[in-house]
Image 1 (cartoon, rainbow over the protein chains, first blue to last red):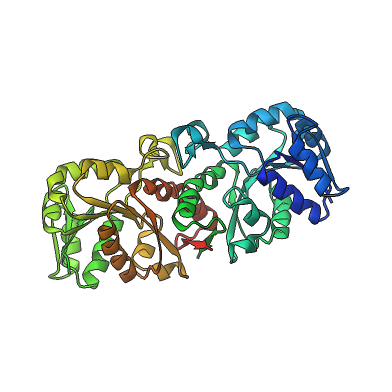
Image 2: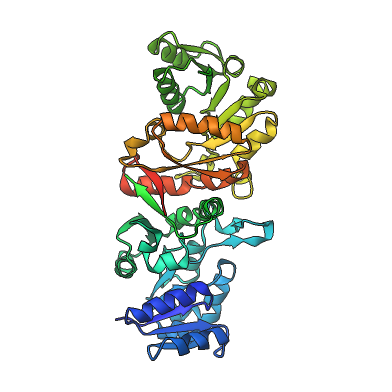
Length: 217
Length: 217
């Protein structure tokens, strides 16, 4: 099993990292400092397959990288981690370019949406890595167990490398995602990132965050 | 049964108008001129409950109005039709603010998306009308028969008037939509209009336009 680096110590990074350890992966959680309290606590709670370090440590250790940072800081995090440390690796980008500056619910950061996407910006920053956009359209507990939506929903996947997408698909299957649509290259991440506004409003209207999208066809 | 005005003579207007006549409604199709060939042909094909006229004729005759125009011209059409002719009426807005100027697939017109929507702009132009955004997220044959998606998909609805939304819900039911989520006021149209980018990319990836979205919860 490949070693995995998780960038980000928030609820998403914690949930993804914990699930991956449960599945048997060796996982490092990376943050700005090597002594981040949340990362240390996560490591302590998850046994010997779990470790913690800087973003750079996570980038060097991981053979597959999960980007669980906030969209507004994601590019800075990759720069901090050292772009060359991602060469040849699969990056699973689950961040969303949310803009909280215009009030609630958040909109999307204009320069990373509509005619662009965060996924594409990460791919441009790391031209030798293989960025795959996926999982960004559900809450983190549904990410790691599609059945928590109560059904068999659809997950989308976008990326330039067929090999990287096959690797991601295998992990998605481990997360109980069985209906997976490969949308095409990384520019198709524009579509999935623009699902956030309807995700947010469906959540607000129904009061239930444990849902997912299904393509009925 | 209320009289219905359909604005627009394209495939969407034609399909919606035809279905409404089949359901027993009196329907007028409105266009820029009273002698539009497509509108006249539609009227000839649909019997005595069908008529054709200008946008203004359609706005005056209709007690419920379907906006089936292209998003980029929708506001001009409402101005041409006479904004006062929509006072107190329910407007079912199924147009999308697609921007074809940046290449294919289309993006969304920046000033009508993300922190704004076409639905909101129409409501601002017609403050005494009740705009309800719905049906804009599927192809026109699925609009008038949800079962053509092959399942029981979800339709979203956005609007400021509960009464207008109840009226629209009854029509949606006649179009075989049974799983309807009321997202809230017209600002929630931002969410449904931003579904177009994923609709387009799913269509391009699968080659099948007869699909719809289902909220699995």
